[in-house]
Amino acid sequence: MSVSAKTVLAGVVGAPVRHSLSPRLHNAWLEAAGIDAVYAAFAPEPERFERFVEGLRGGVIAGLNVTIPFKARALAIADEADALSRAAGAANLLLFRPDGQIEARNTDGAGLIGAFRQQAPQVDFTAGPVVIFGAGGAARGAAAALMGAGSPEVRIVNRTVGRAEALAAMLGPSVRAFAAEQTLAVVEDAVALINATSLGLGGGEGPAVPWARTPARAVAMDMVYKPLRTGFLTEAAQCGRATVDGLEMLIRQAIPTFEALFGAPPPPQVDVRGLLLRALEAGG
Image (cartoon, rainbow, N blue to C red):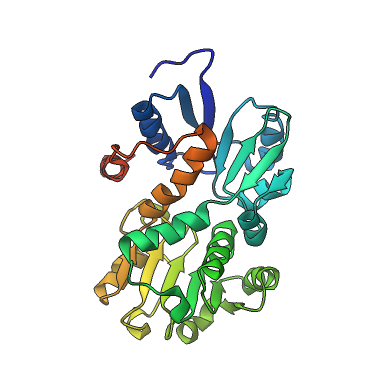
């Protein structure tokens, strides 16, 4: 890939960010589309996030995907935001305008719903409650998207119940908060269970779920994609539950992101899932 004086720069920012597959995904699309652009990864010290973003105002960079732990702070620093970002209280995409303005968007919701439609099309979000583990920016985006998809109730389960309560208060009466100790009581009628925490990243244990007590129709989804088959998904599958992986969500949220950053849809001839699976198998 050559770099010229006209090359457009975009990227992803997080802490940590070394595990991110977004650069592989977007650069594969850019190369296939013949777009003069580069997508890179940035890892500022967490306390310097705002200073880092402020330094990019004025079109120095086309935009940034935002990942853990900066999604709520990304929304706060933006000058304008789309409805999904405002509803979620978090943004996973910042667009830098030539006039110095920063626009926040949230494509996580579209990625989550798209991943379910691809890997578990039988799920009916209107048929019962959805349980989300975690109360950070990813959980906020997921809850907002599920409400938009018609979920009658979203249940937020978090080890620190105060954070879950704050999220529920922000999103409205159809979102309820529960402590981790209440997990059994909230999963028995769930149509979907979503891990929106970083638990399971790198092979660690995910949220503890009594899968045998969940309905046979329940679908498990883990936003973690490294490893692809987390303990959360493996245990769900062992109980006969359908699963949706975080890699599919990554791909689905990246489609509107690519269009926003580079002004064109991703080229359909690229097998990005195959590309990313090979990268995961190779350890990167």
